[in-house]
Each structure stands twice: as structure tokens, then as C-alpha cells.
Length: 308
Image (tube, rainbow, N blue to C red):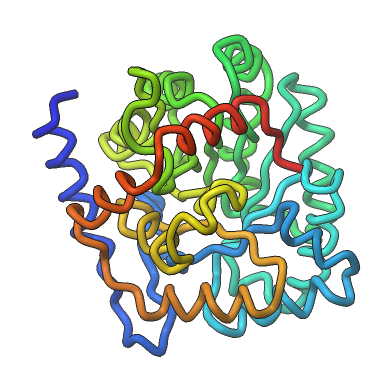
């Protein structure tokens, strides 16, 4: 894809992302062509949610985020072997219709995926999810296994409205994600999009922003950013505000952030409510401030990192 074509896609997508509300409210954005409008900041319910240790601590934290305007809640069966889903299910009692609920399935075979999803729905105390992702695509072989099994289950569940939308996540290999997005009819995708994964590392492109994101935009998929802080590896390189603003300034519907303390919830939501797009020149400057050594370390870390 030429640079001019990529710039055109980005500019077109960005036109729909401007906050529609006053600064005191959470900005919302359309999730691609799904028709759903979601909060520009999403509550990640992975290891950082599990860091609350008990449901007595975790559930009030999620409630606080919802009360402050977060509507996109992102969990997975693989987060604590269902523990995150159980806590989310309890937290959403009486609030389910106010939330865009997302979970992920890690199994690749059809039977295993079907059983896993059935368990997810029970833990989440719901008969449907708004988005069901194939969790953590890694390699061409992994994609082939997913195509032969779990992907067929997702298509069926979407037809049955058990999953209103389907998608796939990846933080490991942008080329494999690009292939998956080109081949299949996904409504949405989630990928690693942060200030430390732009550009070349050892002469090779390693960026989801450059490789996979343009495909999702061309196909009008919803896109959510994850690994905004690169699993904390970007903290200290610049301010938290800059890292959040960078990811939110990309043509994404929402930036998924883990927030393991109440003060993180307050801080990140304040940043989201005051959001103004970061000019591209400032985004490039921010990325250039991060050393090639740091970028390579991030690539190496995520090569075999598993969400849990």
C-alpha cells in the first residue's frame, strides 16, 4: 500500500473520531461499520484487573469506571482461567444493557471453542456478547488451525446473535494478522498499537500500525488498540498522558487499558475526557524519542507473550 493511500485511509477514518461531547463527558466513537458507539477508553479486564486480587476490590473498580462513562468492557476466558469473566459477570448484574461486552476464546478446535464459549456466557451471566474475539493470534500455523475450527463456530454464533459481532486479536505478528483480516469477514479486530511499535526494527517492519491497521480500515472493521503501555515497558519513556493520547489519536474506536488501581482509573478517564488528537508530527517525535533498543526489546517480549 502506498504512503498516500495509507494517509487517505487514516484521514478518512479520523474524520469520524472527534469527540462529540463536552470535556466533562466520555467521548464515544463508532466501532467501524458495526453501528455500535463505544467509549474511547475501554476497561481491560486482564492481568491488571486480576491484580485487584478479590472480587470485593475488583467489582467496585469496574463499577467506578462504568460510572465515569466507560462502556467498552474487555475480558477473556484466558484471563485467570475464567476468573475475570466471573468478576465481570457479577459486576454487570443490573448493568448489562449499558455495556458493550467483549470476550475472547482461546481454543482453536471447534468443539473446544464451543465448550469454552458456553462457559464464558455462564460466567458473564448473559445470553450474548457484543463482540467475540479469537484470542491472541500468533503464527501462520495458528491461523490455519483457527480457520479450520473456531472461526466456523464464530460465524455460526454470529448468525444466531449469540455473538453480535466477531473479531480477532493479535499482539505478536502484524503480518499474520494482516493475512487474517484480508481473508475473513470480521466485524472488528484488536491489535497492539502504541508509540513504541512504529517504524523499523533491525531493518524490518514490526508495526501493526503500518501493516495490519490499514487493512482493517479499508474493510471498515472496528479497531481497538491494546498494549497501550506495552505491558508497562513504555512507562518512563514519556508521560502516561502522551502514551494514551498517542493510541487514541490513531483511527481506533477505543483504547483498551488495564487499570490495576483506582487512581489509574481516575487518571486515564480524565485523560480520555480531555482528549484532543495528537498531531502526526508530535506522534512521530514521540516515537523517535524511544530508542531502537527499547523497540526491539518490546518486539522480543511480545514474540511469545501470552495474555493471562
